[in-house]
Image (tube, rainbow, N blue to C red; front, side):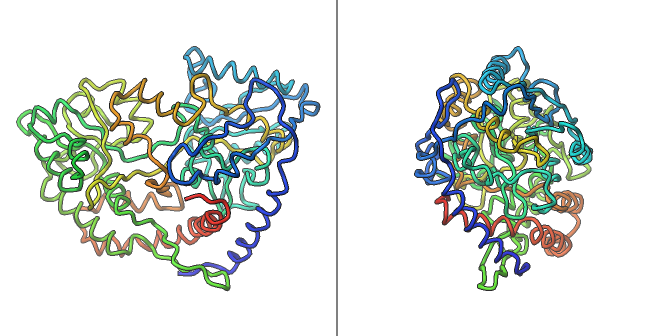
Length: 506
C-alpha cells in the first residue's frame, strides 16, 4: 500500500534535523552532584541505540542557572497515586527521588512542584486546557502512556508535546541506557517524530515486555510436567511444549487450570510471536510513496491465529474461560494464579510486581509466550512510563535541562547492569527469570496497542474467536488495521528506517 508524497519531505527533513543537531552541543560540563554524561558502554548487546560515538561524545551545554533562579517549574503527573512519580515518599526509592528533586532545585535555584491529572480519558481535555493557564506545566510524567499518546494526534501541529530532537543537544536522546530502547520510545512517536522517552534507569519505570507467562513451579512439579525453563535450556520451548505443560497441569477434579488469561491477550501474543509486525515496510519509492504489508494479512498470521483457535476449541477445559466464554480474566484478574488454582498466567510488567510478587502463595518463574519455532524470545512493549515536554512549557530548553538532570540514575542504580542487578536482588533469584524479564532491544516490538482502533480489533476478534473462521476474522478486521497503520504507523517506521542508517541503531 502507499501513503502520501509528504513522506519524501519527511525524509529530507530528517536529514536536515541531523545536520543541524550535529552542529549543537557546544559548551563545557559543569560540576555538580548530577551527572552530565553516564557514558554507557553498549549495555544491551548489539549496537547502542545512538551508536557509541553519539553517546560517548555528548557534552551537555552550560546550565542556564541565571535564567532559572527563582522560577517555579511544574511537573504534570499522570499517575494513579499522588506520590511523586508514583513512589511512596517514605520508601527507599521515594526518599532518593526526594533527594534528587532537592538537588536539582538547588542546582537551578528553582522550585519544582507537581500537578496531578487523574488517569483516564479526560486527560487530553485537561491537557488542552492547561495551554491557557498562566503556568500550565513544564514536564509531563505518565504512568501509562496510552492517554498521553492521544495528545500527539498525528504529530506536528496536532501534538501537545515537544519534538525532543529539537533539544537533543541538551537531552542525550540516543542514550538508550538512560532513556529506553528505540522500540520502547516508538510508543511515543507520531508522524515520524519522537515526543517522549522512558526514565529507564529508575527501577520499576524501566520498560519491560508484555505477555510474559508466569508459572507456578510447585504445580508444574506436582503434576510431573517438565519445567518450562528446562524446555528452554534444552532449546525445545515452542507452542507444543507450552501446550504440553498447560494440559499436564490441568486438574479438573481439584479445580486447577493449566492457563489463565484473557483470550484477547493470547491472540495478540500468538500473532506477535510469529515475528510479523502490523506494518512491514517493503519499499520506499523515489517519489516518497511507501509500499507496506499489513501483518494480519500474512500467511504467518493466519497460521498462528488458526493454531490458537484450534487449541482453545480442543482443550477448553485447560484454559480458565469461566466455562461459558473465551474471555477469561483480564489484567489484574490474577486470583486464580496467586491462590494456586492455575499453573500458568499471562501477565504484564506492572501486575507482575503489584499482584504476582506480592500475593503468590507458591514459588514461580518466568517464561515467554511460545512461538512456532523453538526458543523464540518474544516480548512486546505496550504501555510504558514516559516523560515529555508540553509545547506550552515556560521555556522548552529549561524543561530539557531539568528533564536531563532529574532522570539520571539514583543511588546504587546508575547503569543498565545495575537495573538488572536490582531485579535480581529484589524479585528473582534465577538468571533465566532475568533473561525473560529484561531483553535486548532486538527481540522486542512495539505493539501499537492504543492506536486508532487497533485494540478493538483484538477485543472484537476475542468475542467472536470460537464462532468465526480464521479467514472471516481476518477479512472482518484487517481493514481497521489498514487505516490505523497508514495513519499512525507507517510514518514512524519510515522515520525509524532513516534514523537507523543515520544513527546506527538496530
